[in-house]
Length: 518
Image 1 (cartoon, helix red, strand yellow):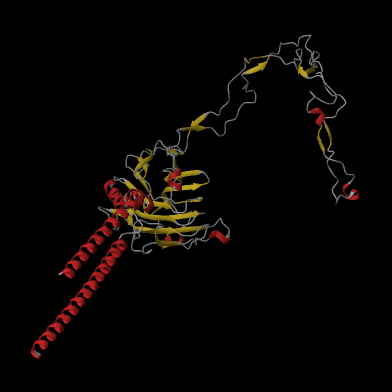
Image 2 (image 1 turned 180 degrees about the vertical axis):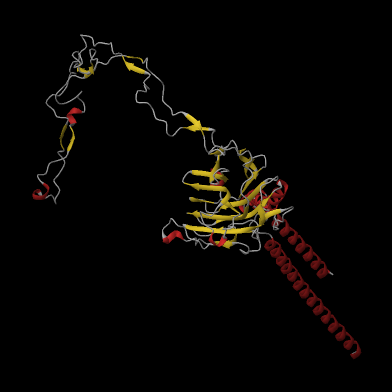
């Protein structure tokens, strides 16, 4: 019997332990469910956090800059991408005809990146200061001699702050024994001057060359005709523009901006003054004879004033047919004293005189045809003839407009090859500007058009491409409007993710209930 009770107690204890173990499993299962929910919540939060709160435009296509390299023979090439002024000489000269305060060429030059550049690493020469004389120059690899090959000069300019009054032209400095770049100034002899210049609303693109008179040996500036194109945009749009001068041995020339011809012509026909002087000139010693008659018409000496011509008749007379309008107020003045006016408190009659009210239009005249003394209106006098003059007749002694006789021009010459100019050995910038931060870049002097075009493509062309890519790139607001997921779409995605989590939670609870049932 005792053994039976001992067995019963043992079974009861084992049963109790089993129930407690099952309860502990249930508790652990509950903890697992909580952990899953927490993990899912964390995952949902991570998904939500991973989605961008705002849409930003993708970065603009990257244009990689590489310094241009000449693809053929050049006399000069400068991209400034080394970041220094090595090879350039700053002038220490002073202008002779200017006040000492501004006579020095002390304007500042620096090699810098362009403002708002789209090409990191692309540097240029910058005229930094305003209201200063600036002069800087550099020698060519060898002097340029005008013979059988063209001359091509090309460079870039960007008026980063616009331009008020100033130039951005270059001078090709003549090869002379006296050339001293350390003393480069406005009187330093040059062969060609080329480039943009502006003051006020006068927009210019210079092409000037100095021609040597073969008889006298003196030099005279010859200016190309003004372009027909409108140049204003090149000075005002704050973009980099490419200026090119092509001068050919047949005396033809072309001036291009951004590789588009804006002016062209011939040195013999399209320069002012002309290269070749006239064969004949007016005789400076010839004088007009005293009896020379230049009058094509003369008063008729035989004409007589008519007897009935009244020179004293007036041009205007009173209209005798006029009638005074009804309601005219003869005794009312047009203006009366302002009845509401008051003498100022600080009026001093000893100093200011007797005070009088200001005059105003008479209110009684507003509805009347007029006030004051009526007078007849004036009309043209039909009998007016004015002062009599004899009629004009042809002058039988008329000899025409006198001109001095022509004589052979003692200074006449004919130069059919003005292209063969004075050789030059340096390039310089000698400028005065009222605007700062003028950007120069990518100078090249060569003889082959393809070499200049390649240089332009690798320099100015990259700037143009980078600027074009930046202009076409949508802003963040535009991108968000057109391409980014809209808020309602993003909300739907979040809702689907939450539904998925809820379903997993329900499935987990059902599994736990099945365990408890077992």
